[in-house]
Length: 327
Image (cartoon, rainbow, N blue to C red; front, side):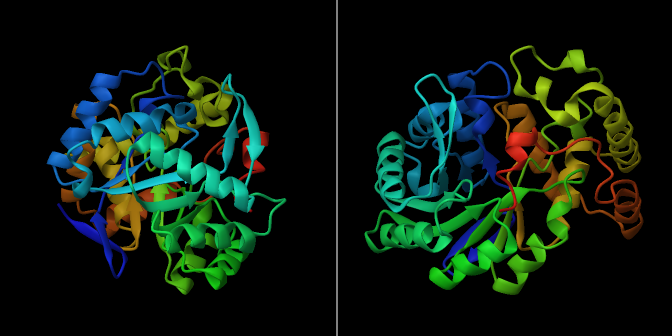
């Protein structure tokens, strides 16, 4: 397994595993299959396991904790707080208040069944709480031994700079893929300027870049992507043309579209760590094959030309979700 450095003390596999879809959003959950996928990932050398307290309203942390029993020492465990959910799964807003930070961490530790979280993210920035207050409370968790390293998700560069001035921030996480390249404008440069590593979620464009979806009807009825702006209406068909380019280049290269798309993200720098999510062992193994795919300069130029920033049709989230990113 190839590795990448998060901090001088923290080295992770070059590809991590995102666990969100195992419990919510991407169709029917299958606990046994998901646990088998996590176990296989660990067996193959994947060390970065990513979850959050909002995924399945805590169910995903419980699932991950169950999967890690007897294997805890083999992984770097990352989870997140900040997106509050109600008893029926409804979204209640973003909370970064210090008292909530402490409560959320204790609840995550209990669900995960661990004594310490290796990487603790603020999932979304609370516009009503100064980032210094939130990160200050997170720093207290480090001092107490409950958390080892801190991260932010979907934070703007200025927010990241203020956070780093309060306590070292190991990682910033945001969506990044061929069809989501807005981070290249200022977020990724800010990370590099500050020495903060970059974790890329949804590096396969939420599965669209794999060529799996040919019609909107291919998306399961209980799958959140049915209502995603990039999977809906005319945007679907416009984006399908982009995905077909990935498929064509992959066929010529002798790899799968997923492997090509992941190879592109991996090629953006050793400080970029993609965390593709899956709940299927076969797809996990396919994704890991991307580590052996080396793009030529011509192939990278082809992809960069087709997937210029802003080319993808539709926003990354619905309007309410877009308000919570890059802030």
